[in-house]
Amino acid sequence: MLEQQRTIAKPVTVQGVGLHTGNPSTMTFVPAPANTGIWFRRVDLDGKPEIKADIDHVVDISRGTTIGNGELRIHTVEHVLAALAGMMIDNVIVELNANEPPVMDGSALPFVQAIKEAGIVEQDSPRDYFVIEKTISYSDEKRGIDIVVFPSDEFRITFMVDYKNPALGTQYTSMYSLQDEFETEFAPARTFCFLHEVETLIQQGLIKGGNLDNAIVIIDRQVNEDEIDHLKELLGLSGDVKVGTSGILNDKPLRFKNEPVRHKALDLIGDLALLGVPLKAHIIAARSGHAANVELVRMLKKEWEKQRITSRYSGDTTSREYVFDAQTILKILPHRYPFLLVDKIIDLIPRERVVGIKNVTLNEPFFQGHFPGHPIMPGVLILEAMAQVGGILLLNTEENPEEKLVYFTGLDKVKFRKPVRPGDQIRFELEMIKYRRAFCRMAGKAYVAGDLVCEAELAAAVVDRN
Image (cartoon, rainbow, N blue to C red; front, side, top):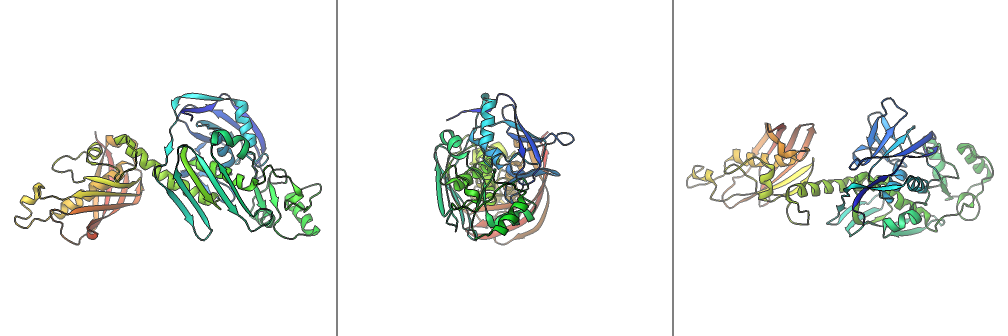
C-alpha cells in the first residue's frame, strides 16, 4: 500500500473536444507540491482562475459531474479524476483552455497513458487515508439505487446494473485492487448511452462533441433508415451508420463483455475523488449514477470531517460510543470548574449538528442555593450548558479552534418545559440554522429521559482569544 503522496514528474498535454460542449480543448497535467490536492485551472480566462476538485464545488450532475465557483465552470470532470485516482496521484494542477476536458475515446485510458508518459514521483509527505469504520449507506427507492460502504483494508468496488435491454441486461463487475486492476480492467471502459436518449440529449444542448468514436450507442428500440439518416444529421456524422446485429450501433466491438458496468464503476471512482482523500473501503453499488455518487460523497465527507476532528484532539479514531470525552472537551472549551457544563459529545456533524451530554449531580455547587430542600438546576445554567455544546459545533468550523472563543450574542424563543433535578442526564441536540463566516444561528433542544425540558435559538460569533 502506498504511504507517500504522489505527483507527476513533468507536464504532459492531451488535446481533443469536450463531450457535451463540443469545444476544442487542450489539457495539461502539471506537477504540484505535496498537500495541494487536485485543482483545475482555466488558462483561457483572465487571471487564470483555479478551482479545487472537491464535493463542495459540484454544481451540476446532468450526464456528468460539473464543478464551479461563481462564473467559473468545468464540465465532465469524472474521467480525468478517475484517471488521477486510479493512478494514485494526490497532487496535480489540470490546466484547460476550455470549459471541459477533451473526451478522447470516451474512457480514462488516454489520461492514464499521459500520466505514465509524464512519470510518477513520490513526495516527502505521508498519504492520508479515510478508513471507513462503520457501514454507511445511501438509497433512492424511487430510482432503485442502493450504495453501501463497508469497512475494508483497501479500496474495493462491486457494481451491478440491470437495464431492460437485451444488449445489456444485468451486468456486474468487481475491483479488488485499484493498484493492480484500474489501468487494464477499468480505465479503458468507454462511456455509453441508449439510442432513445440521443435526440433528447442533443435537444438539451449536450453531447455536442459526441460521436461513434468516443461513445458506445446501445440500440434499445426499432429504428428504420430514415431515423438513422436523421441521427447522422443530428450528430454531424459522415460515412455509414448501421443498426447491425450486436445491439450496438455500427456493431462497434466492446473492449469488455461488461464494458458498460465497468464504465459505471469508473465514473464512481472519479466522483469519489471529489472527497479529496483516498478511501479504504469496500463500496457495493447498484444502479448508481452521478447524482447518487455525489450524494454519497457528501455523506462520506461529513464522516471524514468528524473523524479528523476526533483525531485532532484525541489521536484516536477507533469506533466508540462518543466523539469527545471530558478530557478532550477541556482542550476545546476555555471553561473550567465550576462552569464547565458539558461531560461528553456523542455525535458531531461539522457545520450541521452536535449532541452533548450533561450529567447533573447533587454535588453541583449551585444546588446549595437553588433551592435549599428543593434542588432544581437554574434555567440560565441549562441554557449555558446548551450554549457550550453549541460552541463545540461552532468552533469546529474554524481552522484553529484552540485559538478562538465563542461569544453568544442572542437568545430567542426560549422555553422551559420541565425542571431538571439531581440525578438527571441532559441530552442537548443543536442544529445549525445559519452560518456565515464567523457568525451563526443554532436551534437547541434539551431532553431528560426523552422529555423536552428546554428549547431555544442561539446566535453566536467566533472571535480570537487574544
